Length: 107
Length: 219
Image 1 (tube, rainbow over the protein chains, first blue to last red):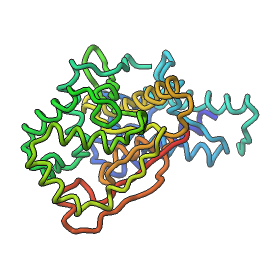
Image 2: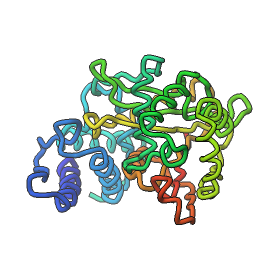
Image 3: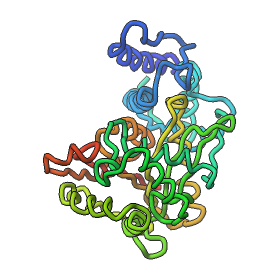
Image 4: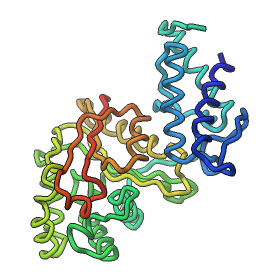
């Protein structure tokens, strides 16, 4: 599941990069920073990433997730920090839904 | 998550809140309504906005008590205003109108009154009593892309529900040119409820956009 999610994030990065100059493109790596000052994503970029990846997760896994729910801000680790941490966070959100019986995977 | 502290604004924050209101009013454009409508220079607008905040009148988007500040390393990162509409039986439009009348020079009020016909179609926003409204928001460039608006918004909703458990909806009104705010609210599951469009060609000289978007979410 994590690999599929990383591919969904990379798909957004492709879209983001297609509108960027060569020096501003984001690397498609699990270590790529997505959050804060060190990130190449600004406020619009991060909001778009979240909206589009949530949509893609729904299409792929038939699960509606809310990445910016209020609980995320009380987590010790920042799930938006990198591609890898975001993918792990999305897996945990999907699994949470699965545990609550609100899941139908097409995988 | 990250080390942001969300707290209520105090009189010590007035300078940052003035910056917040000015930047939010511009919404990414060069048009400041305090200049175009009220005929004030930006420097004078700052003085009058500070004066209105210092009046500490509750219940509208210029209420000091309604602002939450996001702070990191003791430095303000962003601010967002919020209020419960018609809490004391008086609408936010009335409260703000009275505040502007009281604090701004008479000639500014007369000028704005003369010009108001140009954008009257944008003035029909239905501020539903008992709902939470979010107003001016600003995040400093250094802290953009850090979900500061999301943190502020969640805290406003939490505070509102703690004090007024009957609050069921949260709204915001944004000029359509302010894509950053619109996208950030969409990210927070706000939906566009209504759009108001001013048809006069003069409006683009006065306001950042001729279109105002009302977004809402059930809480």
